[in-house]
Image 1 (cartoon, rainbow, N blue to C red):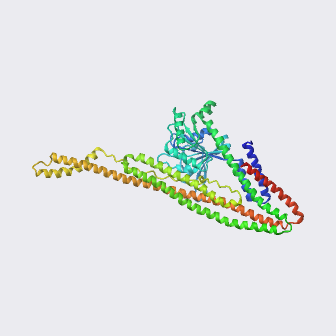
Image 2: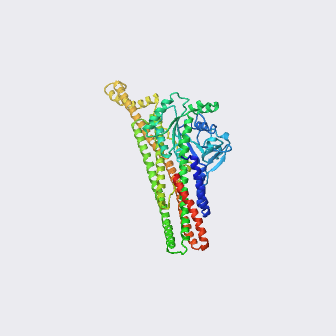
Image 3: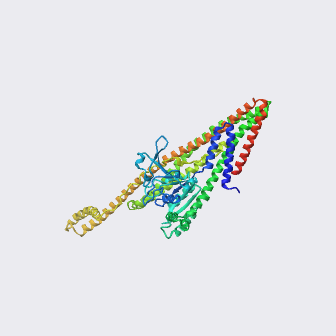
Length: 600
C-alpha cells in the first residue's frame, strides 16, 4: 500500500500535468485554481486550537509542546487575547488590530511585551485588538502546525465563549483542557458537545496531573461523564511541568510520564493523517473538475476537426453547446436565488432559535427568583444565568454552522449537471471580533439588615398599637402602658416587621427580574449582531465560491463553441497535426481524471 508521502507526490504530479494542459489552452483561471490546490498539497497548514476554562494551563501546554516560552503563563487570567503561534525563520510578534471599513492593521511589538498583554495595551492606539500573531522557529511548527491559544471560557462575566467557538470552526483539531482538581462540570460537558459539533478531531486533556495525586480517579470520572454524554473522545492526562523537566534533563521516562507522547500520537495519527487525507481528496476533486472543463473544450475542437465537411453533426454539436450555455445562464440565476432565499430563511431561523433559547433561560431564572430571596442567592443565580446564556449562545452557534454547511450543499446541487463541485470551507473564524463583551449581571442588595434597623422597624409598628390600645384601656381605668397595650404593640410590631421584610423581598424580586432581563437583552443584542455579521460573511463566501464555479463553467462552454468554430476554418494540411495534439492532451486528461478518482 503506498505511503502518504507517495500518494501526495503522485497527486502533485497529476496537478502539474493538468496545469500544463490548462496553460497550453490559455485557461489562466484553471491554472490559478490548480496552483492553489498544489500549494495546499505541498504545504498543508494544520490549525490546532487550544481551549478550556480559565487557569487550566492552556498557555503552558503550548509552551511545553514547542519547548519555547511564547505564551504568557501566570496565576491570573494571562491570556486575554487569542494568540496564534506559527513557524518563522526569525522570532517576531504582531498585533492584529481592527480598522473599520478596511483590512486589519498589523503592528509589530517586541517579544518582551507579550507578558500580560491585554486588549487595552497602548500599542493598539485605542483600536480593538483582534489577536496577536507570534512567529518562532520550531521543528514542530515547521511541519505545518499552527497553534491558537485562546482566552479562557467560563467564569463570572467572561465574554470569550462565542469567540472561541468561532475559532473552532476553522480548526483541524481542538485540544480541550480541564485540570485534574475536579471532574468535568456540566458546563464543561456542554461546551465539549458544542466543540464536537464544530470540529471532527477533538481530544480532552486532563492537565496538571503533577499537582493532584488523585488524578487517576478524576480521569475515570471524566471518562464516565463522556460516555453518559455520548462523546467518544480520547482522554489524555498530561503535565506540562513534567514535560519541561523531562526536556531539560533529557529524561525519556519522565517525558512518557508527562503524557505528551500520547498527545503527539494523537496529533500525528488522527490530526495530521486526517488533514492530509482531506486535502488530498479536495485536490483530487479539483484535478477532476479542471480536467472535465478542459476535456469539454478539447473534445468540441476535436469533433470539428474530424468533420471537414462541416456536416449536420458539427452543426448539431454547436447548437447543443449553445443550448447548454443558455441553460447554465438560467441555472446561474437559480443558484443565486437559492442562496439569497437560503440566507434569508437561515437568518430568521437562527434569530428565532436564539431568542427562544434565551427566553427559556429568562423564564427559568425568573421562576427561581419567585421561589426565594434573590438577594441571598444572587451570586449563585448570576453564575448559573451566565453559564446557561453561554450554553444557549454556543448551541445556537453550532446549529447555525450546521445549517450553513447544509445551505452550501443545497446551492452546490444546482451545479450537479456541470460535474463535481467542491464545497467552500466555511471558516467563519475569519470574522474577527465575533462577540463584544457585554456588561455583567447588575449587583443586587443582599437584603440583610442589622439588629438596630430591625428594632426600629418593629418599634414603628408597635408604637401605634401601644397608643391605640393604651387609650382604650385608660377608659377602663388602666394606665396607658399596661400588659394589654404592650402585648398589642408586640403583636403589631412583629406584623410590621414581617410585612416590611416581605415588601423588601418583593422589591428585590422586581429588581432582580429587571436585572436579568436587561442582562439577557444585552447578550441577545450582541449575539444577534454577531449572528448577522457571520451570516453576511457566509453569504459572501458562498457567493464568491459559486460565482467562480459558474464563471469557469461558462468560460469552458464559450471556449468550446469558439474552438469548434475555429476548427472548421483550419486548413486541411494542419488538421491531422492539430487532431494528434488534442488527442494526446485528451489522453493526459483522461489518465489524470482516472488517477484522481482512484486517489479519492
